[in-house]
Each structure stands twice: as structure tokens, then as C-alpha cells.
Length: 370
Image (cartoon, rainbow, N blue to C red):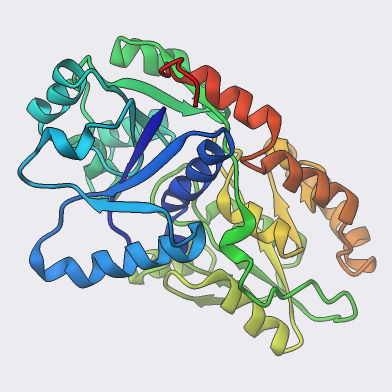
């Protein structure tokens, strides 16, 4: 079988968790013995340099032999003649004629990955008047009029919402694993947690794009655990900054735009400060950021039930029990169990048997031998 993964162009694969999906799925399909290529959206001549940078970064991570192409504007049968399956990840063409051509004329199995909590976004789209980028994406790029020829897949973590999505889109949705390949950090000098340091500060990396993942709950937790500790709020802008200062006038903050997580943590350690990361999600329990923090052995306070044995886990409905647990963890220098960490990373590996089995069950592949 020959699988093509469609993606949107990016500047850096770590700038958004969605970009990492191509890395994880490519490695999983190659481990299964499939042939796999990557097709990047067509870009204007002025963006050719960005396309080459995107292509080179993928080759550095996946190997020089990976096949990476740009989608041709003049759609030709030749570009897809070997494809049996196409999976649209961060990019879905708005041209329904093209999508119908792939499925009906070329008879290619075509899928779109729902990679965010669309139920939360749909609700925000109805009630919010501001021009949130994700809400705009929902409105313009992925309406209920999606062609019937496109099959839908999503991550297992959205199981609680899948029935509502199936009713909305009037089609069956299958699950794939939310896996993670640590090769994205292999060439980085990882800043392992230094347990001898005494000073710590809270860090919040939530993207602040929707109610699914934002800084409000983490700030509440920081206030509960130690209201005198400095708080770093990343992925911020002036609008978010002014609202936070209005709501929490007595807390100490630093505000940052989107940052390189590794470099930011390393800088804190270089200033003899332990970064204690605070995280919160609403029905989005798997998170590439959490995986990176686990790999780097960083202290993490979170509400992801699937990762509950790492760091300090809390239940949304009972935050106050955190106080005693945090004091004990602080006395223990935020020590983390390497055994639990290893089990989580093994479970996340896109090449492990369980993840490959779930991946296979989601797709209708050509059954001829690989």
C-alpha cells in the first residue's frame, strides 16, 4: 500500500502540536511496511523558501530518503498514480472537485483527521463574537458540507464527543492512537530536572486559543499552591495580559509570546530555578507538550487522566487536595519516578504493537501484500 500524508506548510515543527502528527504517522506506517510520502500544500512563489525549510526539517527528522512533494496546481493523475490512501492532516483543500476526483476517479481512500476538540470549538463559534483564529478555521475550512467521499478519523481521547460529531457530520468516525515520537527532541541537549535546586517558579505553556487549553485554571492552581511564587504565562498577547492582571492583581507575572519550550526551561535552570509547569485541559487529555515535558523529566502538575502517574495529577472538581500533595512533593525536590516515565513513553511510541493495531483498524487499506 502507498499512503500520502497531506500537511500545511510550517516554519518549525515544534511551533504547533498539530505539525507533529505527520512525524508520528509517517514512522508508524513505515514500521508497518507501507510506502509513505508527504505532500505539502501548494504555496505562492514568495513562499518557496519556507517550503524548502519545511521540507529540510522533515528530512532531518525522517531521513533523507523520505519523499516530500508540493501539491501541484494543475492536478494530474501522475502525482497520485501510486496512492491507495490519502490522509489530510493539517491541510484539507477546499476544492470539492479535486476531492471527488481523488475518490471517484482515482478510487483513492481519502481521510481527514479531526485533531482538535471540535465540540468545544463549535460551541465557542456559536457564542463568541471575537475573531478567534481556531473559530475562524472551523467556520471557513471545515463545515458540515464536507464531501461525503471524505472519511473521518480522530484520536481515541475524543471518545466522549464522537457520537455528537457523528451526528453533526452524518458519518462514522474511527479512532487512531495519539502517539509521539521522541526523535523530535533527540538532537537537543535535554535539560534534565535538577533536584538539588530549591527555588522554583510556575510556568504555563497553554496556547490560549480556546477554552480547551488556556491559562485560567493553571493560574488558579498557582494561587492555591503558593500565591507568592512568580508565574510565567506563555502564548500571551497584550489583550490576554490586561485581562489576567485585572483578574489577578496580587499575583506576580511575566508574560511571553509563544516560546521554544526547551530553551525557555533551560534558561530557568541556568538561573538556578526549577520550572514547575502547570497545565489544564478541557476534554483534551493527550498533549504533545506534556509528552515533551515527560521526556525531559520536568515537574508537571496536570489533569490528564491518561498520564496520571506522572508528576502531580489533580481532579478538576477537587483542587484543594493538591495543597498537601504539593507540599510533600516540594519537600521531595519534585522528584519524578523514572519507571512510570518510561512506561508512559513506551505506550506513546507510534511503533509499538498496540498503537499499530489501532491504526490499522481505522483504515480501509489495499489488502495486497506490502
